[in-house]
Structures are given as structure tokens and as C-alpha cells.
Image (cartoon, rainbow, N blue to C red; front, side):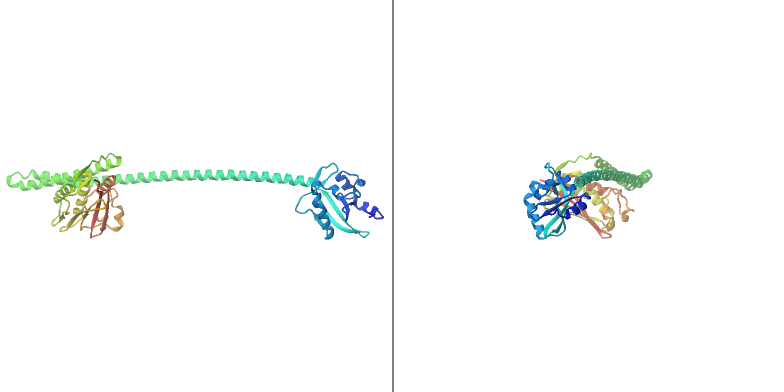
Length: 407
């Protein structure tokens, strides 16, 4: 096809003034003509490219697929951008490659179908894109680095806050314990003052009266006051023993002595001593079937525990009532129950009954330190036993001591 006819001057006029490279290709994929921009872009003289195959300008690795793509374009031709979605490269005369963007436009020249391709060197654009991509990657790395650093700072702050909270909680707990200790000291001094004052007054009174009874006929009166003094002194001695027990339990200086002994020995001793405290009409129901029971335990601890429970039953029960002692063995456990028909423990206060110095509202008028049950529970638990109770106000209480049977 002679493209360089009368249209040649018009083609040169139109193409040589623009900055894009232009190449026209016929249906046989041979170059019909190019403008100076395209020739310079690929490193050729214009005359070197005329009638040469289009693949002259295409890298070797794209030759196989390119011929098929151009044929498909001729069969279904329309204006389009070539290579959308993938990178295109041109090949210079020296064999070097460079990125290009190609726009295609089919047209008819003297009855022959041709394609006009506008080629743009996008090396600088690609360079800028790569620089922008690198800059974006650097920015993302910095953002990631800053984010990680920020997370570390947040974690450090959270740890500091947590430690501060822990420190504050420890301070609050220390202050609470200090207040509690001060309350206990105040309550202790109040209890000691009250509990010692009454028996000491009784002792002083009886001592003064004994001196007035000098004749033989007044011996029974002297004995009555001697008995009062003895009782009061024993009571004070028991209080001191309780306070010493608390101190030993607190400091861990308790030395237990576990031996094998008959249960009846301890119960007989407890009941004998308790009989002197019974009110008018009160009586203690002795447990049955205990003569053959022997246990491995601390004898003094068991006597202390049962004495406390029996004395409480007497103290908090009215006249003409029964204190019932029951003993049973079940599943290698010895259970000793002390049940009374006394004032009972108010339901709302039952959860505090083993707390040191605690006394229920309905028991405040009776003598007591509020430490006996606390001591009993501590000793029993230290020796592998335990103590529980059931109670109903104005109906009575039942305290159950559990001791492991070790043979």
C-alpha cells in the first residue's frame, strides 16, 4: 500500500508537531510509517522502520502472543488502550527496554485497514510511581513502627496504672487492717475492763465480809464467800488462759500433744466442773455408750473446747432446761454435739459467731469475752478437726465438734 501519496505531507504536518510517538501498521503487521518522535523514541531513523515487522519494536519474549492479539484486534477493531491491566514495554534499537503506554485506533487508508498506534514513553511516570510506592511503603513502615511503639507505651501505661492500683489497694488494705486492729484493741480493752471489774468486785466484797464472820457458828457463811472467791478467781484465770491462747495462736507458738486417751475421761472432767455453774433446775444429759471410745487427739484442747461449749450452754440457757451431750462415730469421724434450749443466735449474726471478740446482740448482758469460740475453732482446725452449729433464736443452739478417728 502506498501510504506516501498525497496524504504524506498532511501526515507529516499532523504528526511531527506532537510529542507522542505514532506508528501506522497494516493488516500484515508491518510498519507503514512512523513520525520522528517514535523513531527517536526507539533509536531508529524513520527510513529504518518503514516496511519492517511491528515486532521490531517489541521485546523478544512478547513476540509469540503479540501476533495473535493484533489479529484479534483487526477482526474486532475499536478504539482502545492497549495492555490494560498489565505492563507494556518497547525495545530500542540497542536492545534496551522501556515502559510504554499504547493507544490504538483502526482506520481505512485507500481501502486498506490500518491501525494507528500512539506510543508514550512512561519511564518517568513509572519512576515517579515507584518512588511514590517506595515512599508509601516507608510511610506504612513508619506508621507500623509508630503504632507498635504506641502499643508498647499503652501497655507500659496500663502496667503502671495497674501497679499504681495494686499499690493503692495495698495501702487501703493496710489502712483497713490498721483500723481493724485499733477497733480490736479498743474492744479488747473494753472487754478486759468489764470482765475483770465484775469478778474483782465480787472477790473484794467477799474478802471484806469473811473478816466479819469470826465465830464457829458462822463457818457456813465463810465457806460461801470462800466458794465465791474461788469461783471468781477461776473465772479470771480462764479469761487469762483465753487471752494467752489467742497470743499463742497468733504467733504460731502452740505446741500440741496428741495422745491416746479415753473420751469419757475428758467428758467426766468437763461435766464435773460445769455442775458447779448450773442454774436452778438445769441439768446435763450424759452421753451414752462412750466408755469404750478412745481417741488420738490433744486432750487439753478437747477439754478446752467442750468446756467452752458446755459453759456457754449453761450461761445462755434459762433455769429448768436441759443441756444435752451426744456422741456418735460415723465415717471415721467422732462427732460430739452440745445442744441447749437457750436464747439462740439471731440469724443475721450467725455468720460472725466465730469471729474474735464478736458477741451477738442478745448476749451482750451476759459475761463473756467473745473469743472462746474463735479459739476452739482455731485449735480444732489446726488438728484436722472442725466445728459447726445450727441455731434458732429463742429455741436453742447445737454445736457439733468433729474429730478425725486415727488409730
